[in-house]
Image 1: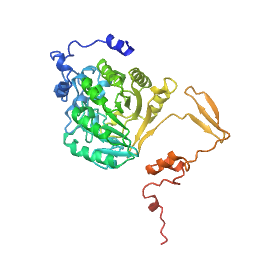
Image 2 (image 1 turned 45 degrees about the vertical axis):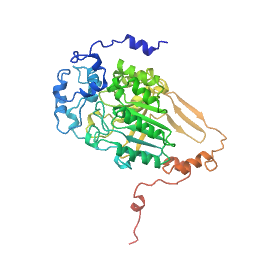
Image 3 (image 1 turned 120 degrees about the vertical axis):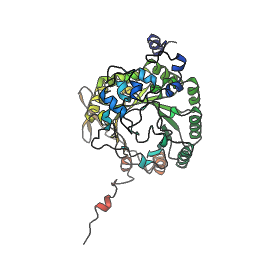
Image 4 (image 1 turned 180 degrees about the vertical axis):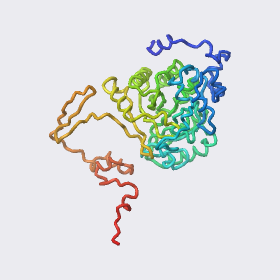
Length: 431
C-alpha cells in the first residue's frame, strides 16, 4: 500500500551525491551518523565555504567562552547560504546578540537545580521526573534552556549518576512517568540507552518512559533499523521531537520520523515560539499541518524561556495568544499544541489561552467561539455532587500525592496555599 508520505518521498529530489561542499564525500559516509558527528561545523572557517556569514554571525562564532557551537553537515546543508533569516540557520548559528543581556535573564531560568534531589534528575511535578542522561547533542540550539551545562563535557553524566537517579525513582513510588532528556538521549551509545530503558522498565511503578530528542532533525541518519529495533523492546515508549518550522521536515527527516511511527511509538513535537523564525500564525499553521501529516502530534508551543543568551528570540506573550487564536477553529483540535509559559523560578508549565469564557452566573455560562459567535450554555438544574470522601480513586490519590496545589483546595483538603514565609511576614509584635 502506497501512502501519501511514500508518494511525497518518491516525488522529492533524493540526493545522488552529497551537497556542496561535501560532493567528494561518498554517499556511504554521508549517510553514516558517526561520520556526520565527527565532521560537525563550529568555526568561521568551517562555515565560510557554505554560508555568506554576516558580521553578527562572525561575532557569535568568534566569541570566547560562549555557548558551544556544533552543526552536523546534514543540518548545515539545509541552510539558505544567502539568507541570514533562514529558519534553519537561525536555530543553530550563534550571533553576537547572544552576548547582550536583557532584563530578567537567568542562568537556570526554570530553577531545575533547585528541584534536583540527585545530580541530573529534576522532580518538579508529583508523578514524573526528568532524567538528564547526557549533556551532549548532535547540534546545539541557540535558545537552549540548559545552556548552563549542555555542550560541556566536564558536566556530563555517567553510570554513577544513573545509579543515583534510578535509586531515587525506585524509592519514590508516586513516580509513574520518566522523561529521558539532556542533552539528547539518542546521542548515547545504544548499549547504554538500552540498559537505562531496561532498568526503568523493571521498576514496577514506572508506567511509561518518554524520550525527548532532536536527533531525527539534526541527524536523521541515526534513526537506523537497529536503533529502532532496540527501542521497540521497551514499550510503552513515547518520543517527543523538537520541531520549530516546517522546513525542518526535509525528506530524510520525513523518512526517519516514518520509521519511528511505523514502529508504533506515539510521537509528539515540542516547539519554541521565536522571533523571526516562527512568530507568525500561518507559519505555525503550516508547521502543525506538516506534523500531523507525518503522524506527529503537536504537543507544546513554548514561550521562549528567560535563559541567558536567548533574549533576541523572545516575543511578547501577546504574539502567542494571537497564534492560538488563529489555530483554534481554523484547524483540527489534534493539530493544536498547548501554548505554555514554563514559569520562571520552577513553577512548571502554565497553559495560556485566549479567553473563550466570557461570563457566568449560577445557571448560565456565556462563551464565544473562534469567529466571535457568542452562545449561552445552560448549567444542570440538578446535580448530585461527586463526593471525594467516598470515592476510592480520590482517597487513593490523596494518600499518594502530597503535592496537590489548587486541586487540593477544591477537594477540601486544605483551605489556603501560603507563600514561603507568609506566616512570619504577618506576625505582629505586641511591643
